[in-house]
Image (cartoon, rainbow, N blue to C red):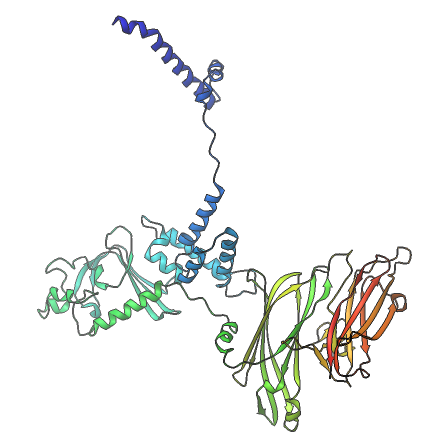
Length: 566
């Protein structure tokens, strides 16, 4: 005892120190604590101060978000191939792009900003979580799964409390007691069939309805000997043991359910289709062409040009050339008619559709001129207004009267003409027609740029330049942007030099020079239209170049194009 008394002061000091610490902590937490507690807070051991919160791991949070997306947001609609591809991605940029494309592929109206499928999907997901939860989130339940995939059924036969039940004759007839169950009926389900019935049973009486193949599972007296007999059982024509002879459905035999085993396989197939991810709708005509293009090809050539429309918009004429000999002509009221369907689509780097078009094209030829016409070509042009940027252009042409189809695609870099201090130009177009457009054509007609009708001479897809005959006219069309203006006169001062060079010898055969002062009332934008006299040029390969030299800014541009004279 004496030894304990010796340590008593130390115990008292230790207890008092803890009391002081507790008071200090209360003062820190309660603004109403008296001021006498403050010194204890200031004198507390620094080692007893609470540690700062740990920094959140951003990478870990992002990883969890992507895991949540594939495991909780889209598990019922993502296909096995998509899931496998997503799991192989190595960085978040690829994952973000994958998710964007994932929803775009399911968008029924890709030309609009809204994605109706995505909006509907998340509404169904929220509804499932609100109405079908049963100890687990609603989306994980079978009812939630089916609702998310196919929406609300056309009708529901609900028995939320179970109880007495008169079996239909297809299930054996007779009376019994049931667990809670529901029968969902869909008049039509795409990819599944018509008049689809799905049965959900809450066999645990806990609110967890599960989709079942066995319509007898709702029978609460199924495993009670002698209870809830079927019609034939009550007549002594069958026994309850016979119900369990089936591999799946433990229904009693009945004249109305003959061939039950074969029907079981039909039900299994229906359930598999109901629960499968919905197929991604093929986008005609692009999916169609993938399967037919390699067998019966319709060749065509095309070229893409760029012309400034405004500071943030570029006119992009797409000109297509189809040889008439590849078009199927049929007789229509004494006229030979060829019919084509031309499809086009412009997508950005993420696959989002920016522009698309589908136009029918008809070529009518008098029967007596068909032989001459089939040796010529038909031209079609679509002008697409696009913001500057990188895109992909896909084109498909289908012969309506035949079975041929052709496809072509390329990356398309739409230039930015907005820099006011940079001398630049539109595409240099070699045209076989260059003439004033009619009043009805200006602004909307085919091959019309501004007040001029410009019909390009399209080269070949194998790299062969545009070809002209010696008796034809080679026309040049080009616009120049952002010429500098003299502050005094508010006019540009530049020279424009046209050259035609023989590619085989390198000799300059045509050299023509003009000054802007000779071209009328020119401002910072200049439209060049030139007809080249090629009648004296021998057959061969040539290059035309237009050199624009701005004498005020000192800038120079020199676009060029090749052509062939036959």
